[in-house]
Amino acid sequence: MLNPVKLMNLKSLKNQFAKNHPKFTKFLYAVWETALVEGTVIQIQVKTPDNRTLSSNLKLKKEDLELLDKFR
Image 1: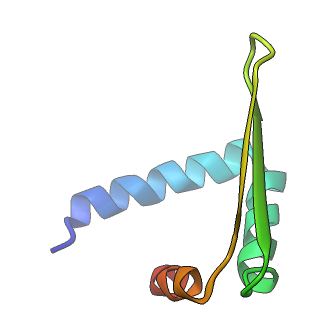
Image 2: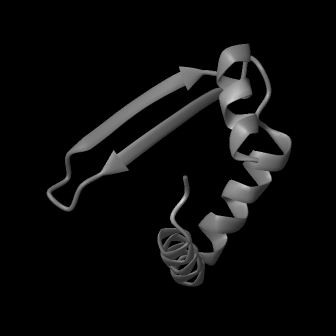
C-alpha cells in the first residue's frame, strides 16, 4: 500500500526539481507524450565535475512500454 506521507513528499520533491530545471522537465514531458514508442533509442550521457563521461543507451521493447504505461 502507498504511504500518503511519502507520496506528498515525492510530489514536493518533483515540484522543486521542476522549479530548478524547468527546461529539462518540459523536455521529459515532451518525450513522455510523443517519443516513447517501440524501437525508440534512449541514450543518456553524464559528465562529472572531474570530467569523466559515462553513457549508456537502450532500445525500447514492447515489454518496456507496458511497464512505462503503468506509471502513466
